[in-house]
Image 1 (cartoon, rainbow, N blue to C red):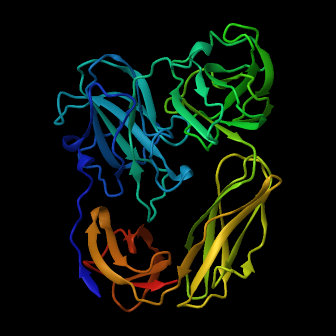
Image 2 (cartoon, helix red, strand yellow; image 1 turned 180 degrees about the vertical axis):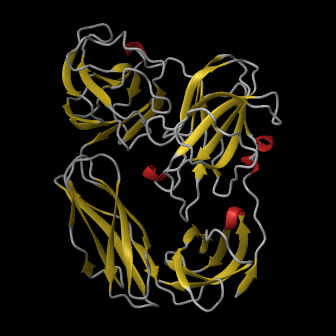
Image 3 (tube, helix red, strand yellow; image 1 turned 30 degrees about the horizontal axis):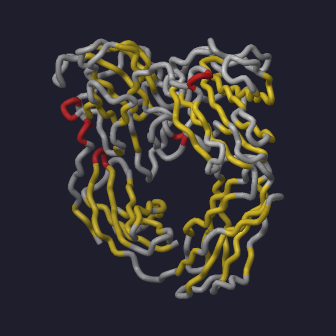
Length: 469
């Protein structure tokens, strides 16, 4: 089937006239809506003549901010936002800041940032009340444009000293949980270490405090790792006892230098203080957030996830598992009934971790038209846990094309409905004489799929067909 395609529009903030406006008085931190900049252009974008690093830029979008009060603000599209171009190593941005009387310009350059620390951009600088600022964010060269959306979000903050900068303001972790307990997110940009106990373990900067009095004795896990909203790359953690409270005599119980997880056996009713600090002497914009997770060592946490890779002969079963800081094994039970009857190979999560791991296992020998059941299983020295039952049915129904359009810069969009969970290969041709596999369509949910084809220069007609893998 051939389609004559019409151009689809870029995002509304593709130009300065449509810039997303950050409220003048916040509240801060302020997060803009998440937008897809896949089809943005560079029409009307300023040319970066300053030495900002990367010069291979594309797809610019605009933000506008006129602060109500002067101060040191941070503008970030970094790890403290939902910015995601299809993987951490694939998300590369460039940000530049300008002043202008309005969206017509002229635009006067203020500052720019290529990589704050990761490939994502952030700026921390003094802004003047009543001055109109325009921020432009581009896709930079380390991004590989795939069949995934380019999600971008900006975070604007006016950092102040966090409430738990001192022992007196320590965030209190409930003694009885429930566990795992995840606390508040703290911005350490303006934190100090003036109240910290003198200790050979504490070699960090800009610390924040936590207090915990466990109701029950046990081995507790303190984490500021990837299972939290912490964005600081490298940290120090020191656990103190102090029966006299703040200002009393502190004794070091445990210290973890340049790491993000600490495990300690604690007694019921005895308070402890945890001090978390940044390993870097100066704050890195967008990488200043701390959030603490406290859990009680025990059996793993296991969740059975929906299947992927469905085909007429097999499927891929998926799970998430949190080993709770113990070496843990996982596998699947599966079969044509709730009695299952089959078990996949038992595999090991060898490194003690507290963050959730995602694991997959392919199975084969299934028959289309039969409903199969499966569940995830995890076990460690503290016990065995079964995930909830999931089921799937492989369908041989044909996909139905529901939409198509030509996107900016020679991109083509194909949309179709088909069976949820099954992968579909999109094939393309410009002549109907020969066909080429273009890639796997992206599932949107609810049985809807889409595929973006970027052939560059293209004839006025493109032909597409879809097949189940």
